Structures are given as C-alpha cells and as structure tokens.
Image (cartoon, rainbow over all chains, first blue to last red; front, side):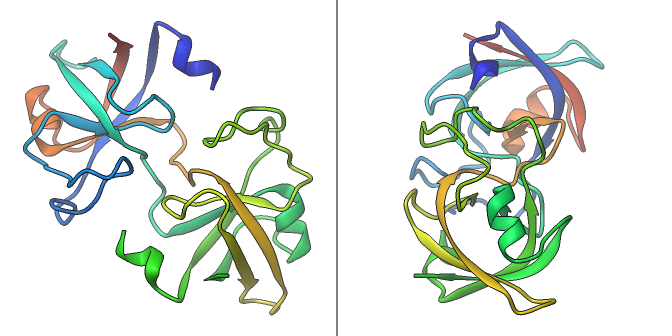
Length: 99
Length: 99
C-alpha cells in the first residue's frame, strides 16, 4: 500500500479492549496486552513504529504484530461485484459459510 | 481465531467504496472491484465463502483476498501497555513514524 512508504502517518489511535489478552494475533502470536505491540492495517509484521500522542507529545515505540483496527460488528467487506450479486448497496446483515 | 472454525458467522457486510480499484490487497493482488472477492479479518487468503444477504436470501461465493473491514480514520490499535505509555485512555490523535 502506498501509505507504508511515507515517512509519517496521522490519524486516530484506539486500543484493544479487555478480552483480547491471550488470543492469537494475525501473525500467530498470543496477544499480550502488557507488551508494547500494536495492530496496523498494512505495515509488515515486526515493523517498529514510533507513536506520538499529539495532545501531550509523549511517544512510544511499538512492534506491529496484528492487523486492525477493525470495525466492530462488520464481518466482511465486499467488492462491488460481490455486493451487487446479492443486492447490497450500503450495508446489509449477512451470514457467512466457509466452503 | 476461534471464529474461523465455526460453520457460520453473522454480522454486517459493507463494501469497498470507489478508489480502491487497482490498489494492492493484503495478499499482494491488485484489487479488482469487478471480481468476486472480499476482505475478512482472519480467514486464510483463498478461502471460498458463501455470503447470504439476510434481507433477500440471495447469496454469492467470494474468495478472501484482503483484510478488513477497517475503521475509517483509525491508523493503529494499541496494546494496553502501549496506550498507557503515551497517556491514551480512549482514542487519541497520533502520528506514526516507521523506524
């Protein structure tokens, strides 16, 4: 993705709520909420990133070991062709079955 | 993730807005909005999934080739330790610099 080669990226940081500790991250590790790690949508796993809080200037270096942040409740993001095939023009309640 | 072994999953489907066509998906393909593909947060790339629209019963089989759906504007999801290190208790505006 083009954004991964830019020197800096700005936006909103969120954090994992309770209940994720011990679950598998996208790279197969056990998530440890006490470790300095984070989820990013595209940076390679293992990348070190300095995260600076714009409101107070504090920063921390984290290691990317997961993918996210994801939208709560949304289970799939369809291509235009896939959406049209089932009559989805905005969002829709769906069920998924792995084949 | 435990959910990937379940026979079915329900929730909300969204679809890629304009502007993604031709960009790289998480598995390195060029995104083709005219193909029957979709993004899922954890299913292996290449998995075939039947997606059924609960409002009209129509279904389509898609191939997972990307990760998502992501939250717009959110750039990183921090562990509790990472969030505390920079004074984030809810969400916060941050800048990221790859090291």
